[in-house]
Image (cartoon, rainbow, N blue to C red):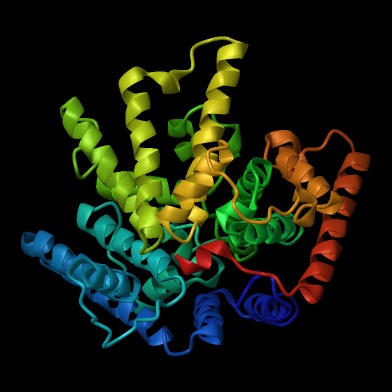
Length: 466
C-alpha cells in the first residue's frame, strides 16, 4: 500500500488512527502490529509469511544469544547468516544465475525469484536487533509481539528509514503520545506527501522520458536535464517517504531519527554521505565499518574498509552491476578525500564554491549510473553529457520533454532542496500571523497533493524496489 494512495490516505490511516487512540495504552501495540501486517499484506499477501518468518528467526536468535552468552558469537553468526541467506535468495539469486549464464554461456532458467517489497529494510532492522542484544547495548526482548512490531511497523516498513533497535527499544515498550507531537507528525507527513506528489513525480516523468531514449537521440543539454531531473526526483521521492514515515511515527508516539539533511548543499562526498540516507550510512558504520576495524587500522586497511562499505552500499540498493559501480564510484571519492584532506574545505568562498560544484558533479554522474538499466547505457549517457556522442538518429528538441511547467517545477525543487524553507515546522514563530500563514500553506499543500493523488497515474516510489 502506498502512502500516496487514496486507500491509504482516506481509509487505512483514518481507521488506524481512530482505533489506536480509542484503545487503552496496553492494547495499542497489538493494534499497530495488526495494522502493519495488514498494510504489508495489502500488496503482497504471500510474502507476509517471509516477513513473519524473519520475526521468528530473530526473536529466537536473540533469546538464544542472551541465554547462552558463551556461544553468543556462534548463535549470532548463524542468525545473521539466516537473515542474509533469505535476503540473498529473494534479492540476488536471479542476479547470480544471470551472471553465471553469461560467464559460462549456460542456460540456467529453472526458477525466477520475485523479491518481496521492503525485504532489505526489515532485514537490516532485524540484524540491528540481534547485534544490539549481542553487544549488550539493550536487553533481549522477551515479548514476541514487541519484536514483531519493531520489525514490521508500517510507517518505515517498506522504504525506511532503517530504524536501529537501540534507538527505539524504550519507545516500543513505553511512549507518550501528545497533541503537539501529533500535529507536528501530521505537518511532517503532509510536507513529505507534497515532496512526492508535487516535485518528485513531475521530475520523474521527465527523467523517465529522457532515459527511455537511445543516447543518439538526445543532445548534450537534454541529457543534462534528464540527469538533473532524476537527481531531484530521487531526493524528493525518498526524502518525501522518510518525512511521511517520520511524521506517521510521531503521530503514534515514535520519534525516529532524521534520514536526510539537505544533502545537495554538501561540499564533499564525505559530507554528502553524512546527509544522504543517514539511517543506511550509520547502519553500515555501526554494523560493518567499525567491526572491520574502521579507522583504527593502517591507512591502507582503512581504505579497503571504506571500499568494502561502499561496495556493500551499492549492492544493498540492487542486484545489478550499475548499483555496484555506483557504490564504488562514491567509494573512490571518499578515499580520495581521505587521502588528500579535500573534505575539510578550509578555504574561502571561491574554494567553497569549487567544492560544492565538484560534489554535485560527482553526485549527478553517480545518479546516471544508478538510474541507467545497464552500465553500457550509463557510460554512453555520461559521454553524451560531455558532448562525446555523435547523434546518428533524429534528435528531438528539449521542449519535447521539458515544457514551462516542468521548468518551473525544477526551479522550485532546486530551492526546496536547500534549507531555505527549513523553519516551516518550527513551532516558535515570531508572530501568530506567521504561524497562521504557514499552517494555511501546509493545508494548501495537502489539498494540492490530495488532488494529485486522486488524479495521478504516475506514482512510483523508487526505493520500493530495494
